[in-house]
Structures are given as structure tokens and as C-alpha cells.
Image 1 (cartoon, helix red, strand yellow):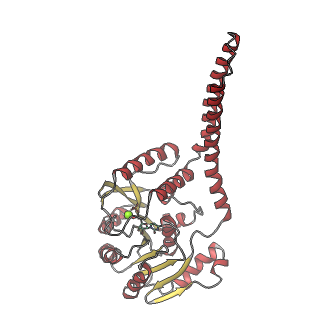
Image 2: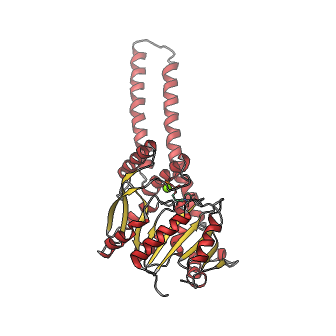
Image 3: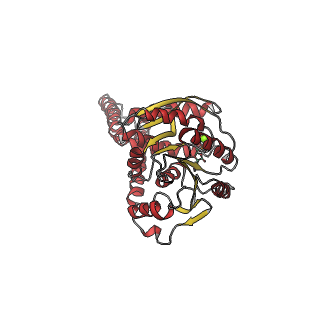
Length: 341
Ligand code: UDP
Ligand code: MG
């Protein structure tokens, strides 16, 4: 078919309840926006339900679908990264499979991009079906992130966005393991235009972001976009030095007045205060150090088990994981995707 004008990349983790509806609504939106020249890349992020068989079924019936199965659950951001490595379109839409981001907004986003934008990102004007806790923590998080980060990262955004090929290629060239995609796209710059929209409640199924994952996602974002917490040590150290000086003055004055009380209470306070400060600072160092350790390993970001397209399932060749990143990319481009719709 030649050039594909639009690729849609949707990560799917245990989404059997929504996939059919997602496919129906997304296909209609793609047809409306750019006709036949599109593909929908569905990335199965190691689901344990019937998500993959369902993707295979959809891919067999609809040549626009490219199913990608990861070996295991890599998490939302890496599933998206895997999809981006396969997407061929001259524009790429990132969208959640749970229909919280309405596919029907696609034509409008394409129009904004026709006007010269490099990135059109959805900005949530309202969010129904989210708990007050999630809204409050999200708002606090973005405020903190923007204080600490040198790159302005727009608030109330997710990964719902349309990007042009240049931006996608730059993003693909960013090698980090701990990925905060919306921040990385902000870092790329160019003309980024916000499109306000009403975020829907999840169509079916449950959220895959429990509190634990949210905290680790937020820590990834902070550590990838700011080293200010590392400098926290300096401030805490200065503050405790002032505190220690006050205690010292107090102790000397008491000594001069002849009040040589044992003073175990104040020592105890000082010791516990300072060891607390030290542990906090060491913990912050540890967060960064742990990430450095993971980055220097340079493991592959994701592991693909199979690609399904137009009724054909292509397993990766046995030596795929022995190749370098560039070779892997070339292979994905030529051999595995030659059956392009
Ligand atoms: N997701 C994924 N891998 C994961 C967790 C989530 O691919 O480990 C996908 C999920 O299927 C959905 C999107 O990422 O399409 C967003 O997840 P979810 O809707 O659960 O997050 P929330 O909207 O509640 O923040
Ligand atoms: Mg969701």
C-alpha cells in the first residue's frame, strides 16, 4: 500500500473487556481522519486474560491491525515504546485502549497538526470517574514536577497525543529505561499544541495503576527530569548545621552557668535528628544510584514474542536478541513488517 499516513499505538494489559469496542470506535475515527491509509498497533503487554487471542482474531479479520505480543508485562510506558518501534505511519497517535481518551477526537487532532503542529497533546479539561484521591495526588505531583524540572511539562496530560514522524524518531532514539514519555516529548520541543478534552471514565475493566505503580511512575518522572532532590542533601545539611549550632550554644551557656546536667535528652534528640537526616539523604542518593545501575546494564527496553498481521504470525528470529539496536530496528522494518497492509 505504500506510505501509511497514520499509526495508532495502544497498549493493552488485560483489556479483553474493551478491545472490541476500542477497535470499532478507533477504526471509524481512523477512516474519518485519513481513510484507508492507517494501521492500528495493539501491544499486548503480557496480559493474563484473553487479550492476545482477541488481538489475533481482530488482526486476522482486519488488515489494518498489527498485533504485537510482548514476552511479559513491561509496564505501560515500555509497551508504548514497543508499539512506537513498530509503527510506520508518518504520524502516530498514542492512546489508551480503555476508551478513556475518546478516539473520535482524532480528526480534530489531525486538523491541528495540518496547521503546523509537531505534537498535539490531549489536555484533560475534566475527568469523570476518577477518585478525589487520584485527582489531588496528580495535581500535587505536576506542581512539584514543574518546580523541580527544567523542562516545562504541561499538567493534566497523559500520553494521549498525536506526534509527527520527526518527533517519533527522536523519541525512539532516546535510550533510557525509565521512561516518562509525556515528559520526554515535552523535552523534544518543536510546536506542541494542547487540545482540551473531557476524559471519560474507563469503559470496562479495572485500572492497572494501583497506588504502588503510581508512586513508582512519579518517582521515575522526578528522577528523570530533575536532579534537585540530589541537592536536597546540601539544604538539609545546612539546616541541621544551624540546628546543631543552636544546641551547641545552649550547651556552652549551660556549662558556663554551672548547670552540668547529664543532658541525655538533648543528645538523644540530636542523634536521632541527624541520623534521620542522613538516612533520608542516603535514600535519595539510592533512588538515583539504582536507576544509574539499571541504565548502565543497557538491557533491551522490551521483549517481543510475536507479531501478528493479516492472518500471519511472525515469531522473531532466534538471533534477534543477539543483535544491536540498529540491526533490530532494520529487521523489524524489513522482514517482520513486509506484509504491510
Ligand atoms: N497498561 C499496560 N501495561 C501495564 C498497565 C497498563 O499496557 O502494565 C495499559 C492499559 O491497558 C491501558 C493503559 O495502559 O490501555 C492505561 O492504563 P490504565 O487505564 O489502567 O491506567 P489509568 O487510566 O487508570 O491511569
Ligand atoms: Mg485508564
